Image (cartoon, rainbow, N blue to C red; front, side, top):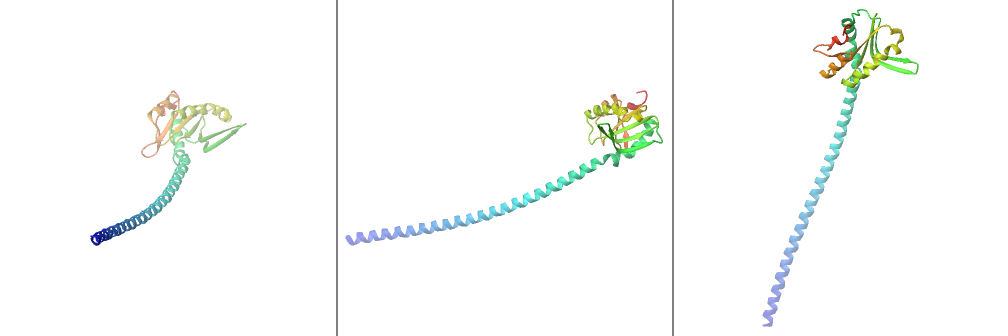
Length: 210
């Protein structure tokens, strides 16, 4: 009986060791699989970081390109007067003021008067009148009031033209109807882009009997 009991215990121990060995193998396989997954995860994270770095680099390049484009656009808007508006002003002066031979046509006029400095986008000086232009990328109601104040002080800043009629022309590529109506009430002409060239939207605003 003792021998049988001992044999039973040995068999039990053998089964236990075998199971323990299987568990150890399964654990090792699990650890290996986990290690492999961790390596794959690290590789994926490395690829993700590389992609993010590339994305940031591309975003930075896009931002630089965009800044350059905005800069170019700002420069183009800065030459809006010279490129688009100014070439039409002599014609507008002829239409509105019957001024066929202006004595002066100047763009980007800077006037120093005492301690004051004034800038005018363009001037067309005629025998009996002076046409003053100011150009805005987007015309706002506040621009009208500010421009009227500028027109009112013009004889003081240019006393040599004090006896001449002062005619103001605000220009923009496009203007809202409400702003045009306000300008008309304030006696200011508004010029905007038509199908082919710039044209005055409200010539009645600057008629002598307006």
